[in-house]
Length: 303
Length: 331
Image 1 (cartoon, rainbow over the protein chains, first blue to last red):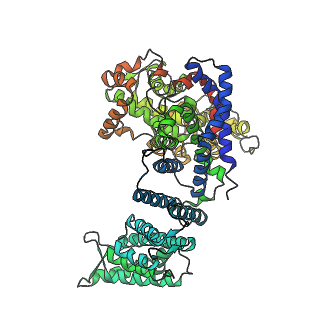
Image 2: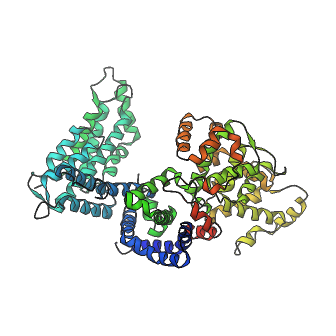
Image 3: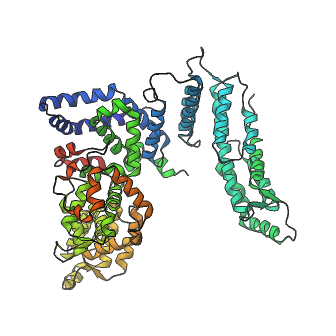
């Protein structure tokens, strides 16, 4: 995996070398210095310059990340990538004073989150790589003697992940309770990875369930009829227990809809509409909470 | 959310399709030219600004022509920049000549080739003399087609000429073409009194062209739509139809519909902001729109204050060898 893209940056550099001489001649001529021999020397040294200041290495790493994540918009991805890098580089934020311990911790968390979100969890190799990188940057705090990630940082990261999503807090809280570790417990990479994966899959599951709810919801009241919502939840549960145990949020959520079929969905809605008395409504938060609970029941707790 | 096609491509193809290496390479060139800035701001920040400007489409301002035409995104960005900067010309209802439009183009791209402007003007003027006046929107939409689909139109012109002289165009461009074209010859001989070529045959040839063309083409369905509405047409008739087709404009995505070209209050604000950053342009455009057609000073100096993009020196040195570079980065 690491071998394939390696020639690329050097190909880039080679192309740069081809283009450079003309431009550098111009800039030297402009500043009124003897040009020809200087330009040749400059072309030679440009590659060294790029290597010395770390551009070569930086671009190689960036390109690897692009290839790993295969983003739809690679240029925006790169802008974001370098922006994040700039935020954490020591040359940027006041070189004089070292930032406080708390700030350092926040920066590390931000970095880890950013790595975790680089690739979708269905791209398993890329996701696993990013999880390892995130794990390393969280555990590499200079103060402690032996490297490792403690339960507190791990829980904090999980909470940040959940906080940034649109899902209601109550829906996600049971997962946190289930996979959180004790504050001073050391978290091995395996547990960390499983926890991150469970969290990402749940977030997507809840997002998908939210989309389902929007289909059912009465737009004026922002509620759905319980007589439609409850059978759908039951179908979701059926699909989850029929699953082979591997977390695949998208397939899981939409399968029940297909199983139900448009006819039975229409029938249920029709029954709901025909009922004289309106049945008790179900809000989005309640629906999502129940859907999430179904999923969380399948997650193995941290032993 | 996930496009399987993108994920299944080999690395090189994925990078080439999105021109990632073109921009990385250019970023390094820019960085080498602005070494002083790096020591001050840091490399990561330099790259952040570079890639952000690529996303926003401001990266093409005052750059050399070879770069401006290097990718479809650069071309669309240039069209957008041209429209944004000189919309006031259209708003005032001024009519300008081809040479004057060329001056405007050179304000944004100092080595913009006159040939391209001439070709665009010919779409508007057809048989009229080249020094006739054109409205901003007529020129803009014709220019858009000519600039964005330049290579495609060159191939179309070759096909058209072959059809006109009764040759089977496919034998010229693809040597392994089928022999089904022979029966067309007598028909063409008869029709040579009429103007232009037969639309259905032309359409067939263009469909083949779209299939194998490596540069951007207009959406084949829309090309077909244009050609199926007429019996015969001339080359410039075809180009006019392309430039006036709002579906093609939408597919290209650089400019708004013709009706929305002039009124856009948000854009007016944006324009103000943009012009403030470019001191060389402020006087000539906002104060007196007519003045924009007489930049007698060398246009290459106009844009120099733009921070990460100042490029005038490089342009002077490289302007002649520029086309080969583009070909490299396209592949």
